[in-house]
Image 1 (cartoon, helix red, strand yellow):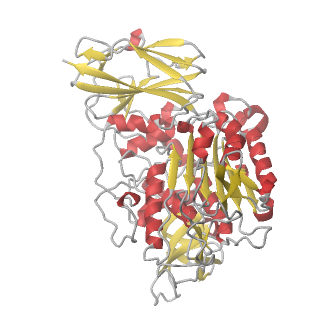
Image 2 (cartoon, rainbow, N blue to C red; image 1 turned 120 degrees about the vertical axis):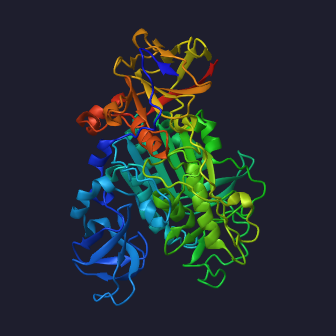
Length: 622
């Protein structure tokens, strides 16, 4: 496809420079792997990025450390085990606040992500994570002990609080927007009240993360005609059980407002295979891979419902969509299938939470080479870790993470590793189907369609955009692109093109010749306008267009000066996609004072990152 007047698109791949992201990065995120840092105070080197993790040894102020990774408020380092360096160096974690980052500030141009420390092949994008945003919220619920002393304790649920916080921060949730309910704070009525309070705080286009760690259960509900699944709150009893149906009702108002709602249950709803086993595992006896005590995350409160029979299985997504919520806008992760039990590790927390955390922050691989890590890729990564952890267990098979809703959701835009080789997973535990094991395959061929589809999958389905083309087949050298755009909400129109040559991506609109991309609710605008026509110029094939209507404008100056005439051009590779995706899914004005103020932010669409979108294909023919 060619652009008039007399514009020839570049045949080379053009990079995107997003300098704003560098400006917002904290010093810990601008460091270089292998750099030598020093401690600013006496601190402890821990075995994991958790305050409860085992202390490997104490570090004095001024101790030298070699940086391996920075993530979730923690820093993975290599430290000398003895002052004279006679002993081998030890790898562990220290809090980022205990490290002197001043020398790191001079190395912004050579920034790398923490994923390189994991041995992945990584694209150095310059974006490790994005700054906190006022339009992101989290509710983190953890119950490690119950009012009823007969219900088994879950020590790891306290550790899950910290892991879930790291996940929330990776999703740009400010600490001030995270609410915690722990143990006796997490009664049934307190959870209900917290959800209602969250509903009042969330504005149109905001994003919400909800994490629950504790026991799941089942009980007989005559109205439902059988056993139903529920989360078991601290107080238990009739007020201390929250079914998926009730949770969906509590979340309905939130989901009607949110851009995306991500809910994770680190619990299980089956006790059938746990009844004959001790509720407390002994370290190293049943499973040579055990690192800590494992406890099933299920509490049986009903004899008839303790086993997975006569179960009216309706997961949270099913219940939520029954209230009218679109599955595109909700993501639900469960630690296990409805007939499995999941486990709590007293030293590191729930297996599901700790591995989802590690995969989100560092270990997941960009399997489809799309330029970002999706929820499905995070799930696959975490599943492999669960399989490995439970391998060779004589009593239990690995539990399987279940992902419902928008599997293509990208929870955090930052540097991503790329799959580079086919690997196998030897030594799978007996009974684990091959489908439950992720296999890293060779990167898929880069296509412009994938680049645009990545952004399309992040759309808010509640925002309705209609695009009508005059022709869906254009004769090369003769026909011009012509389409109309209409939206049910006021906003700002953006049009991106992946041409039939499958090289660079182009932002067609707005452009240097036409900056008027505002659209009113119900208004129909015709594009391209007469002063910037787009003519079919070949090669023969399919042009893919993404038409977005965003609540708030995007700062396109951050895309740099790489142009094809009046149109911005960007790399059609994983690096360019990740940067373009991060920019196009971020409101330019959300950092303004009006959005930071609780009163002026209310019902202000300029503080929203949400957008509606349509993908369309136009064929170029000879």
